[in-house]
Length: 133
Image (cartoon, rainbow, N blue to C red):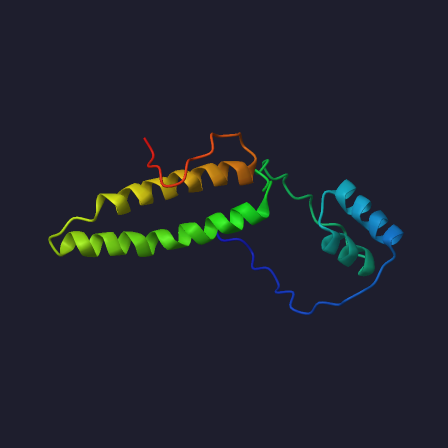
C-alpha cells in the first residue's frame, strides 16, 4: 500500500524573531516533538500539530571537522591511485614496492584520522612513510 502523497512546500516565508522569541519557539516545538517549521505552521494556520516525529538513534558526532574534511579529500584520491596501480598491473608490470608501502601508510593514516575526527577513541599516531603491519 503506498503512502499518501505529501504536498510540496516550495514557498519559504522569512520571518524574524528576537533571541527570546526563538528560544520560546524552539522549546515549544521540542516539547511537542515536532520541528520548529511544523510548530509555527500549525500555530499560524490554526491547524492541529502533526504527530511527533520518532526520535533518531544516537549518531556519532564529528569532533574535528577540519580533520574529517582532510580525510575526505584523501579518500577521494584512493580511486585515482587504485586506477593507476591497476593500469601498471594490467600492463604486465608490478608497481614499485615503495608505492605499495606508501599506499598502505596512507590508508593507516586515514583510519587514524577518521577515528580522531569522530572522537571514537585515541589510536597510535601512524609514522610517516611506514606501511601498515
